[in-house]
Image 1 (cartoon, rainbow, N blue to C red):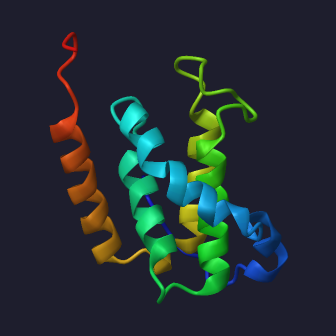
Image 2 (cartoon, one colour):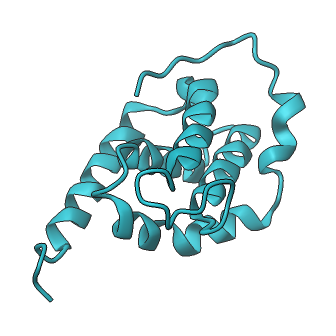
Length: 134
């Protein structure tokens, strides 16, 4: 997914999207469980994990963290604009929300966030049982 950051975007107007204080708690509690269950099916797993690490980084500006937590909380919702149970379509809205947040905030997602995401996903995939095994 290509990322760009538009410095002319004023985050003040969209800050309320992620302003819910419960989003951080929701994301911390359910992010890895959800990602582990869908990582093989969603092409944006690494981007979502990088956004997660950026949102947790205390050096990330508060407004950016709020927007990322809002986008990640949307990803966790099982019933959203397009429910995740619809194969092939269920994660398209989640991908759109994350892609929008990442495109607006790309300059805040550092190489260390991406490296941490790759490492975490490699670990998730290594611990996942092979298809057909229990």
